[in-house]
Image (tube, rainbow, N blue to C red; front, side, top):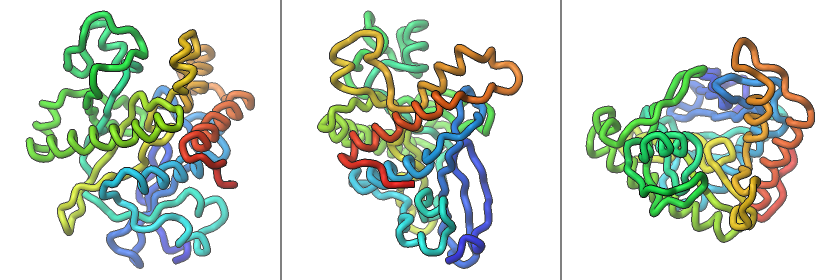
Length: 292
């Protein structure tokens, strides 16, 4: 197929979705180089980011042992897609997506840490007293969130609220699949000296078979919080430095009051962020990222 045969049907913070009359029941998912923080898309983009996210997703889809939405990865499409698209594209089954972010946390960080300080809970789940930021939880917990439109915040919700949204059977299936995927990924990451602190999954149901399938991106730098295990164990101010766009968030927090249009990212911040994305792929997969 030629790229001209595809029609853009949705553009999100990072990914663009295309459909085609030539391939009913399939979608083309193209990861852009766009970077967002504080619910704004920033300028400039991170060069090569879309290809890095796609490469890491494909690596994980092949190792989780779960049904997923991939119909074919980019190699089967490359000769038909223009330069800059093929390495960022996945051909996937069209699914009936669940309107939930299926978040699993193994460590206390981010919004979970903020809630714990206020109430001793994370998404309504009581946790032991005395935990500090970055501590491992007694066991991984499932803390779902609603999917917000572009420019709005996802909202953490309780498991009971997911039952109200999707029904008891699907809510239980999503929780079980999410925890299982996290446990598998966490073990694989640990073998490579990396801690998977938390991550989010998205799932859909095959409209023909009814099968639950892992979808969207999976275990990327954008959807997950990864820490270096050695740095974490050593303690200190950098023990929670993550392999993601935290560099962007920190710079923006220090240089923008969140009013009006965000300032342009300095070249140094862009390159440092790209380097962290590349470093994670090399650590996880054991090989250097594919050329852009």
